[in-house]
Length: 259
Image (cartoon, rainbow, N blue to C red; front, side, top):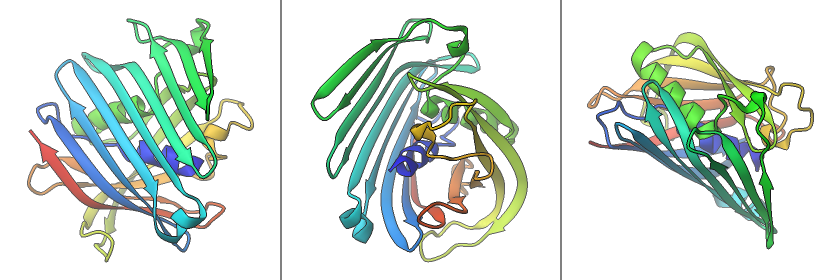
């Protein structure tokens, strides 16, 4: 299920430019032989604040084997070129467990509390101030920052720091050039796409289940197209070449924009 968690957050990449109020993406996820899940994401951007919400749900036979739903919500402030997290919330439901996590930030965007729960057991932990946590953020905000960078420069190269309430790690994005993709029965989007990759640097945190053993040898590849009507970039396709259940592929089905 950790694969669904990170993929669902990652799919929020590339919202509209600043004048657009919201962009909603709908995706279908394939994992090995399974039509494994559906996802829906909405990104709302205002001049001084942003809001990201996402939901993922397993589907079909995969849902029978591994029922899972998850919802994420991030709010924050926009200060010049920087996005500063104000709150991050996550909740999920699997066959046997309900999980919840919330990060509380101060007025300067520094994490101060972590609230986590598994079923009925709730734990609140104060996060001690640390130089290692300075200028870190949550994964959804990192994706939003990369989106704004790409909208401006049409380039994926970036390295950003994340703190999940327990551990710190880096996300490394690399530009992979242009590549042709074709429409298929799962997605009507095709054309000359900008190919990028996302790597995870664990920073020596062995056994970190949040990263589900994703290393620099197993990057996430994604292909960006431009919407013909709005001229806005969006992710058309995502792929992880190898997982324990086979290749993971994600296809964009529909996009809706509101201005």
